[in-house]
Image 1 (cartoon, one colour):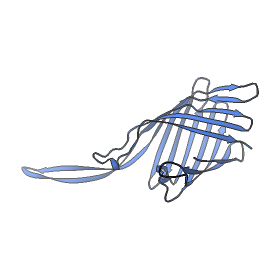
Image 2: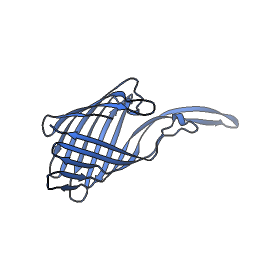
Image 3: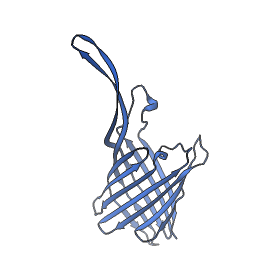
Image 4: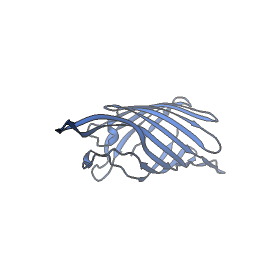
Length: 221
């Protein structure tokens, strides 16, 4: 759960902050930290261009995977047209190492304006997320010399590769009435290229196809 406060200094420049609370069988509405961001977004008839910086402030005791993130910066460009909107993005993430990410997606906006000037927006979307993966690869190297028995040596090497991390299908639904916005976003995520260590599930990435939804209410002043 994350209540968010957002302030727009101009129609393009904003800052926001959201405290993160975790509520499950282990943690009962525990405060995990606050995520602050600053961004610039320019919207025209054909393009949406945005640049942003994110700075998390997680508690040392936070068990969230995302608590490893120390800072993030990114940029995205969206081309708007009547058929399909196209989005391309790139980001850089800072943790104990530096990782790079890329985003590509398509969507199509459906908009309905009612007699009381309330607005319903539905935006079916499909996105691909890619990024760097860094891990240690360990294997055994067997060497022979002429007719003499060979030796077996354990070799460890640091590996860094850029690959597709997931596909995601979503359908954001937004209903706007006066100063209120009601938001509902069902999503289906398909992880890709998980790093696995043979016979060591504790060292392997865990992930499976999952449906989830985000629900929110926004009030503008």
